[in-house]
Length: 358
Image 1 (tube, one colour):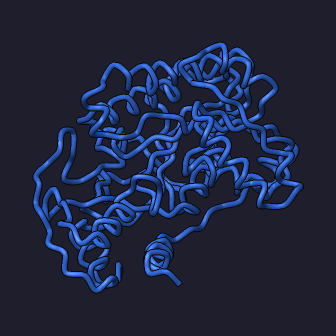
Image 2 (cartoon, one colour; image 1 turned 90 degrees about the vertical axis):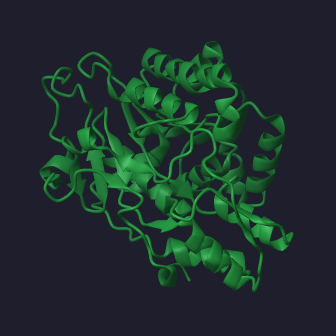
């Protein structure tokens, strides 16, 4: 097996998965129409592949890149013929409200994965980031409300917590759009998930480092103390499904994740490829942190622990609650976080040893 794949599988195996199956995936998706905004990307394809296992009526992939649409349809054509006729492709942009209004009609679940994600590029293109990542999210919200979509799940990022860059700030505002809304008047249940780097995703650090090593180039490193959370593709999809399963509206779901020192990852990769590339310290890039934070102190004060998940209810939960609101499972079966034990959740608190990474 390729060394790159072995490493990714070994890292993913360190992330434990366990959940209370109060509603099975079949109950979530069978005979349902699913819309995936930004569905041609790495995570969108992973969600599509997993949902197809549970006999949905249709999956609509919405994205503005026609080449990626072509490649995605070809990919699923290589799967069974039964799957192929359940995947529909729509070219569209979340900046276009009318396109979203049409796409969300008669849809049961919306996954909002669409965003500009390249952090360094967005620092120099703030206006464009706002148009897609914030105004686009407002369009998604309004289209779902207008069409009474039952559930919508927003994919956020650890960079939205205590944001210091354009990407994180846009995601932070989008989280507020989908969590601070009047649940007594709006039928759609909006939820969000927040996690760190997905192993082997497009633009993630492992493929970049491997290419650098193979090209015998210096490996760029911000600082030898820098840490990052990691999550496997399967674990990211599981968290997304759990948010749909347990969310009552307005929550952010966060999986308990391991983290790593970036320099340890570089050392492990160099060892696996028997390389001797030099490490080049380049300093912090614009908008970059030494450590990522998944939950800050203010959020932890209202958070619940539910098996291997943290759940942050809406900050306006006590104001906008319907009269017949059912008590969520994460409150009935979980426990309120003890701030004496955990007051925030950052990547320097959950470090794997270099031996574990190996």
